[in-house]
Image (tube, rainbow, N blue to C red; front, side, top):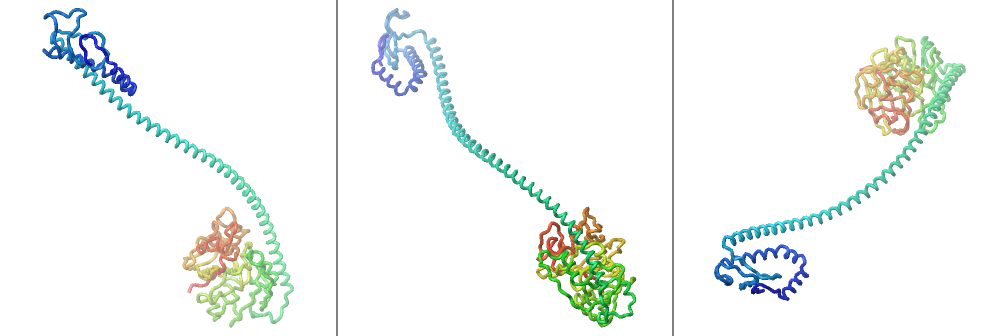
Length: 515
């Protein structure tokens, strides 16, 4: 736009252009109107000042020198101005150059300040843009966190429901356990009552066996065919030996502690030669049906080692006379095992004999000499008192494996010391399960001499040198098949050989003099 004189008119095309610019970019137009218009005004003023102060630049000055422009007069300069709405005449102050230079300096300072403000606003705009980006990122993260929180809340709700279900299940199990405990207590009470009845039946059976034995003694008929011992043995009348009794009484005794899983055995009559009737002051409570072996010499012998050295090499039943006593007893001498000369003091092989006996029965002995039997603690005491003996325990499992445990010295104390066990050093391949019982008193159901608070014989169903309670229980219940189930470990076991829950098939205890 070209302005002459004072008044300047804005062309229509400029106005239309401004309106079109404002309509197209209202933000940019407002920003330009705010900052760029003052800047252009300052630039124009500076330009005019420079033109006036420089001779011949931009126009000529009218009137006399030193005179001021008259009121209402017009300037005669011609210049180019930016598109703005100007009203009135443009007048110039034609003061001295010093004044114009100071204004220029101020205008430059103002221009610099406004440029700095513009740069600062640009920086703020950039920062606000970055903040906007960060806000969008934060919003996305917030949405992600909200979804995650919703998932966690759902999981927590599921866990709460699961815990509630588990609590209900636990309550149900506790009620079942309480019912089972009540049933177990009832069964325990029933078991105690059955044990009492069993004890009463055992006592009654023992009394009946004694009565049968006495009746058989009264009914026995002596004849010459039944005599197999020399008449020159006056000491027999004072001996304590195993006597004969009928097979019917024997079968009654066998049924007390036989293998409960095995079928009941039918009574079988034995045939053999019976020894002459012998009286004794303390007859055994359970007497086996036996027969003597055919021997080269009549005997009696001191022990089975004496039998072997006398030339008798056949295993069987022999009559023994123990030193320092007038006792005569019958025992099985094993001559085929480990060079012979072994006295069998205990044997288990088929569960045919009850070993859950009282003190008097374990003292005198019981069973069948040619089958399962116990020699007797009193006989064992007098036998081991004669000389130094060693003990050998032979074990066999249900797979036919045989092992042994041997102790280089063995004897028992008298009844006044409860037949306390004395053992020497162990050797063998069965493991040492008897040394734990060394120096322990013998315990039965009616004589509790163990170190346990209760009666070990009651729990293990036998008589033994119990401690607290047993690492071995060779006089326990004979179970068929090996592993058994019972409330207590009451089987025939050797802890170092298959453990306490395995009932062995065959067990034998021998003693002999060391070679």
